[in-house]
Structure formats: structure tokens, C-alpha cells
Amino acid sequence: MIRSALLLAGGLALSGCVVDASVTQAPPAPAAAPAAGGVPAGMQYLYGSGEAAALSAQAYNALVDQVRARMAKDDPKGPHPRNSVVLAPDATLATPRFQSCGDKPAAAVFDVDETLLLNLGYEGDDARRSGGWDSARWDRWEKTGAMKVAAVPGALDAVRALRAMGVTVIFNTNRAAANAEQTEAALNFAGLGPAKHGETLFLKGDVDGKSGKDGRRNAIAQRFCVVAMGGDQLGDFTDLFAGLTPPERRAAAASPVIGSMWARGWFVLPNPVYGTGLGSTYDQTFPPATRWTDPQEKQ
Amino acid sequence: MIRSALLLAGGLALSGCVVDASVTQAPPAPAAAPAAGGVPAGMQYLYGSGEAAALSAQAYNALVDQVRARMAKDDPKGPHPRNSVVLAPDATLATPRFQSCGDKPAAAVFDVDETLLLNLGYEGDDARRSGGWDSARWDRWEKTGAMKVAAVPGALDAVRALRAMGVTVIFNTNRAAANAEQTEAALNFAGLGPAKHGETLFLKGDVDGKSGKDGRRNAIAQRFCVVAMGGDQLGDFTDLFAGLTPPERRAAAASPVIGSMWARGWFVLPNPVYGTGLGSTYDQTFPPATRWTDPQEKQ
Image 1: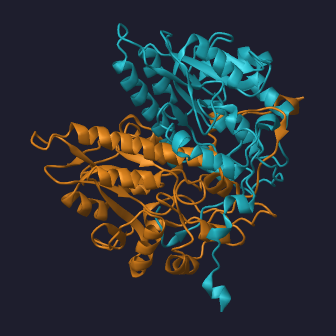
Image 2: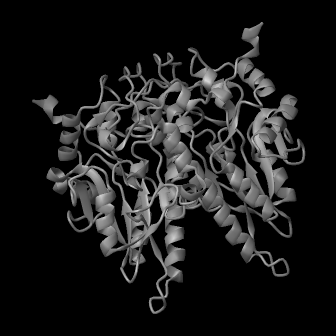
């Protein structure tokens, strides 16, 4: 960063978190008032900044480069020692094991919202409201917002490159099955399609009726060799993070075994606007050992 | 992300932006009141979440993998077609050209704050304050906070791996030259050292007296073949983004030519807490074409 003669950029962040209580322990935080004339800082960053665009393009560039290298190594006539990047059912965060690939065709599995699609219409509306998350309003957004979205920076080039390599692009989202057609339309509008419910589009409750995505991931891994996964929430990679506190999630995500997956099969997109990345308490955010007191105030 | 039965995570984001007015056009935003009992959402995300830890580890994994591949290809007895990832003085964002490497030894150049170091002590203190950026308080932090920082997730492994490959790690930060010793101490405390002012540590005003970093980057590129750069602000890669509006910065960062640099020589770290990634207006954040009105409110 660049510091000095100070330009103050800030703002009130109103964040409607839309996570499933069954798969997270992130504590609830009070709904915030909307910024007076401003845009919540997280939205400025995610939807308005070059820095976040760079982060997204970086994730997609790394994904394409890694899949390309992996596909080039895979001689279809040779042995298939490849593993999927989907964890096996008996895996833990300490001892991850992966599904086997065999001769299955390659696929890449992506979350949708704030992974491939920016929900600009919904969030622009939300930025002007006070109050918290309204699931009925989100449902109306799924039903009517298909033309008010944009592809995440880098996503279009990535899905095109993957398909050109023969890698099937699969969408695994917790949008509602009842709105399958409109979600297909939103992905098509953004240029990310085709998406077909039950084939390349998996929605909430599909396969096992759950909002956790492991059931759907396992079903996909039965048919495909999953060479990459992309998402903005840890639950887009495995449900094993569910039930952990924020510091436990953070430690696990940066642990030697799980930490080595990022950019190497698992690709994370930024989202400081909503989700399981928010909600840590003061002590969870700033460990007591790092407390600092301005020496001027000791005088 | 995962949506459904709603857990509300949000909060007020107080963001003290500390950027140089000479190298950014990000508009000022009003200072926000501190969250009532909460932590600003951007801080929860950056310092408290597994998702941000994953983003950081991803950037560093991609950097190490890319530098390793590049170093392996470089036969010291062969020709040196390598280019630096530092732009040449006559480059533009539309037509980037790069410094040549010749036979110079390899180096990787990093920003410090929120790139290699998390300023947990300072930000934890800031989270409890109202009001804006106070440069005098930041100066006291530089002088006394060396033991209240932590390495960014993934950074320690990366600098060790780079040094093991024979790549010199160079720090290019806008911390004050008067506090060089304390900044060296902070980097050493976090395990990221050694850093030596004038050799591997470049501070604000070094080389050309400016806060823009191009002068220092050029000086480094005279002595080293820069194989990777890391930073949390676009100004950590080139000063050419300075003077652009947020939408222009975003478009340039995601353009075909500059967009292809991310994860391929340029590596960006997340920072939704302060800096040039904040400050976009409503219209700059949410393009008019994406406006959505909740259909229920039309009734």
C-alpha cells in the first residue's frame, strides 16, 4: 500500500450475510444502517475497485494455467494417476484424501454468486436499504434479475479456455431449484453458459436435499474428474469447515495441508460483502497478543 | 456462496484510507462511526476469515509456483530472453513493455503493509476509534509496533522458498525512512527478514524523493531481474494507474494486456480495509445499466 498525505476513503458497510446456519458457525452481527450517501466499503472494494478485479483475474488466470498444465501432462493412452480435487468422504481437514479420477472426463466446478456472477442489481439495491437479509427479496432477485448481473473479471475468459480444453464447466450453487430457468438465463446473459439443471447446473437441495454442497460435489465426482473448483466461500470447496469458529476456519485454511490447495486445484474469489468470511468478534479478529496501545495515550 | 436460512453477518466498516493523493484519484469518503460493539466488516474479512487467508495463500502459492517454473527454464549458460515484470519507463497500460533482464540476478519485490505484514496492533486499535486517518498515530505505530504484527498467510513459506531458489527478496514500502530500523525489526519479528535499508529495503522518498514507487522499482530493476511483484494496491505494480477514476482503474486492471499479468508476474493480496480499492461512488460501484428494482415495490 501507499501511505502519506492522507486521502480518507471509508464508509459504512452494510453487509447482508446469506449463509446457511447448518453449515457455519459465524456469529450473527447486528444489521448496520446504510452509509450516509456512501457505499459500504466492502461493496466499493468488490464491485468498484481495480484491486478486486485484479484478485479475481488472478484467481482465474492461475486456474486456467494450472488446468492447462495438468491436461497437457495427461496422456490419454497412459496411466491415470490423477486425483480429483474433490475430497473423499473419509477426508478430514488434517488428513485430506481425494476422490480418484480413473478415466472420467475432466470438469471444473464453480459456485455462481460472487464467484462467476456479480449480483450488481441486487447489491446496488441492498446498498440503499437499512435492515438485514430478506430471503423473499433475494428470491425475487433470482426470479427477475437475470439481466442485471455481470461476469466476475476473468471468469469469461476462463470458462471459454476450459471448454476449449475439453473441460466441462459445472455450476454448483445454492440458488433455488424452483428458479433454475432464471439462473440458467442469468449465466447465459453474462456469457457464462450453457448451464442445464441436472446436467451442468446443481442447485440447493439437488442430490441430497441439503444446502451443504458435499453431496452434489460427490455426485459430480462420480461422473467427472474434477480438475479445479472455484468459489468465494470455504463451503464451496468442502463442508468440513462447517461448525468451526472463525479462528479455526482461518487456521485450517492456512494449514500446511489445506493451505497448499489454494491455486493448486482450489481457487478462491474475493467477497468482503457477505458470507462466512464476515462475523468474527473483536477477539477473533485481533488476537490478544497483538494488542497495541498508542504510546501518546500513555502519557 | 451458500444461501438459505439466514444468518446475518454484517457490521459497520470504519476504514481509514491511507493513500497518497499524488498517486490516486480515489475520492474521499466520510469517516464512519465505529461499529457499535462490532468490528468493521472489512477487518473481519481480512484479519478474521478463512476466506481471506485462502486468498493470501493462493497468491503466494501461485507466485512461488510461477517463479519456480521460470527459474527452472532459465539455463544460466543459455541465452537470457527473460524480461523483468517491472514495466519500462515508456510503457503504458495499453501497451506495456518490460525492463530487460540480461544476466542480472533474480529478485522478487514486495510491498510490506497488508502484503507481507498484517498490522494487527494498529488496526485493532483503529477499530475502536472514530474519526479518520491520523498520520502522527501511524508514525507512532511504525516506531513502536514491531512486535504487534503477523505475517500474511502464505508469506513466510513464500519468502523462504524464494530465497532457497536464489531469488533475492526486496521490500518496497512507503513506510518512513526515519523509521527504517523499526520496519526492519517488524519484518524480522514476523520472520520475513532480513531486510536492510538501501539494499533490500526501500522506503518512501528513497531514490527519487517520491511516494510513487516507480523510481524505486526502476532502480531495483537496474540491478536485478525482477521475476515477481506482490502488493495489495495497484500502485505496488506501476504508477500508471494513478490519476484514473475507480472505473478506469478497474477496466485497466481487467483489460486483456494488464489482466493477463495477474498470477503471471504480478500477484495481488486482498485489502478491503484501506487504500485505493475504496472510495468509489454509488454510480462508479453499480453501473446504471445494472439497476434493479424489487418488483414488490412496483406493486
